[in-house]
Structures are given as C-alpha cells and as structure tokens.
Length: 153
Figure 1 (tube, rainbow, N blue to C red):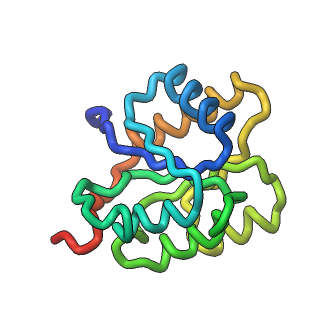
Figure 2: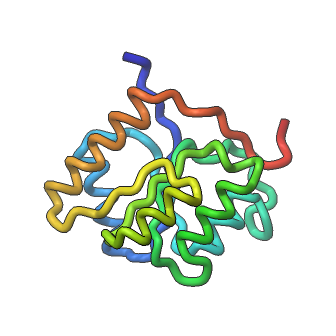
C-alpha cells in the first residue's frame, strides 16, 4: 500500500446542507485530505485557471475535484467541459457527485471526460460508505498526476 496522500480536494457544491454532509461523511470515513469548497461553477473555473481574485495563487491545484452538476452560473457540465479541454487542468480527476441519476446526465458527463460519476446516496450511512470507498481508491490505491498552477513550470 502506498503512503497516505493528503492531496487537496476541491468540492464544487452550492448547497450548504450538502457541503456539511460531505464534510461529516469525509470525517466519519477517516479522510485526512483538505476539503476546499467553492459554491459556483464560475468561481471554480476562476480558481482553477487562477483568474481574477485567484490570480495571485501559487499553490498546487487540487488532486481531485468533486463536482455537483446543478450549480448557479456555469453548471457542472460546463465546468467539466472547461476542465477537460484546458491543457493545465485536464489531468485532474473529476468525480461528478450529484443527486441526478438521469442516464442522459451520466452519459454526457462520461462523454465530456468525467473520471467517475457518483449519485449521492440519500441516507448518511450510505454516503459515508461511498466517500470511504472514494478516498480509499483515489488516495490509497490510484496514483494521481502532479498538478501545478497554470503558468508554473
């Protein structure tokens, strides 16, 4: 087993309730990763591309992005499309984490380049289990690419 990686996770989620649930579920699952949240697709794109209020950031990009689909402004599908077409971002794994079980959403997200699609379980224990498996896979089993801020070499 590889050493535990405390890679940062970006959660793009507009719902305060869902954010608190994700935080609680990660804590209960034993995840040690730093969870950083942005509430809109527009802010997520600015943050990832280091534009506007994020232009002075020099820290590494997140190792994994958890992305809700139904966001104000740019929706999750468009955020995913930008991430997967932008040279500096396309290697970051994006896990769609949404309530939608619509097959059209699932197919569209994989077509755009989602690395995984997880439908949010309704019950908290199911959510903890899903996030525990997610962290085990993405941070203990898989090897993530190194990510740097756009413009850094």
